[in-house]
Amino acid sequence: MRETGFLDRTIRIAGVEYPFQVFVPAGLNSTRPHPVILFLHGIGECGDDGLRPTEVGLGTAIRRTGRRFPALVVFPQAPQGRNWTGTTAVLALRALDLAIAEFGGDPRRVYVTGLDRVSGRVRYTEYPGVGHNAWDRAYAEPGLLPWLLAQRREG
Image (cartoon, rainbow, N blue to C red; front, side, top):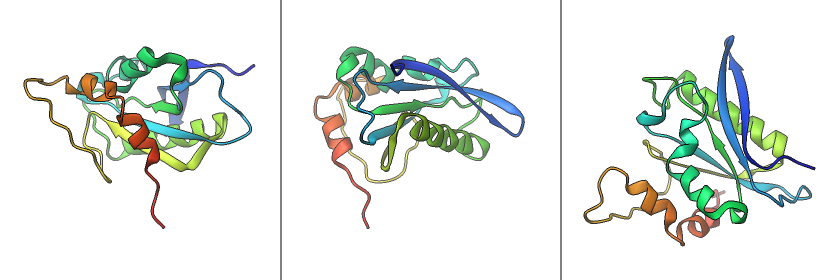
């Protein structure tokens, strides 16, 4: 029986071990590849506990939907004071590759979302009167996940 839920994982880069989390939905069908979402947290979740990135944004939304969440989700964690460039970008991409290999993710259906600067086609929604934590409301939108998973790489 395959483990499900938020799972602890680590990756070693240049002799340094970095913790990260992978969310594996219950009932994951191992006979076909699954979509994979890479969640890039904001500055407030930096650190070395491997947990903080799952406590905001998409992690909160997953906990609300639980078993119904239809994708693997990778939650790398940037070290304190770092952003998603250089070694930290390498960390995120290697964690993504490991999760795809371990859990049967589909490398043709990889999606990036987060609280920091994320490139590619975007969907912009503004919530009047909502401040800094607008991501909670965004990830709770019923149409967001279907829209995200409907996107396909061109070419």
